[in-house]
Figure (cartoon, helix red, strand yellow):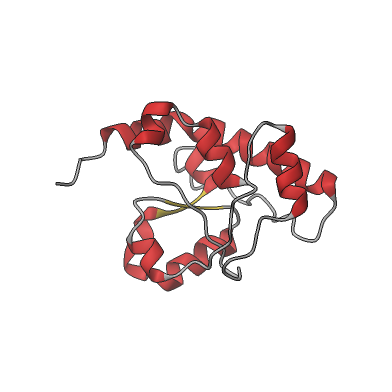
Length: 147
């Protein structure tokens, strides 16, 4: 859901200047998004029906300028994969709060939950991405262009 929400929320300019993807710390590769995720996103006009899961690995962290984790244990797993790249790994809630270290917690994974659990997760992720949008847009647009 988060990938779809971010792609739907970014400005066309920032979207054209970025590559957005998602990966799970315990995900199996190649699986479609859960039915509840697809349903909730469809209700909001976001099509994630073509999404396929992939597992987070060091290469993905290396190739990313920014890694946003939903829960602290996801951020820690990413840091274990690439301890030297920890400066690009952030908890979404803390990133949305401009790095405020007092921000704790995360957005719980609704896996195994009912449709309402997924709906609540969608709302929380959307709120956090919206809060982070000025920072995200600024970092994307101001990023140096590689030759």
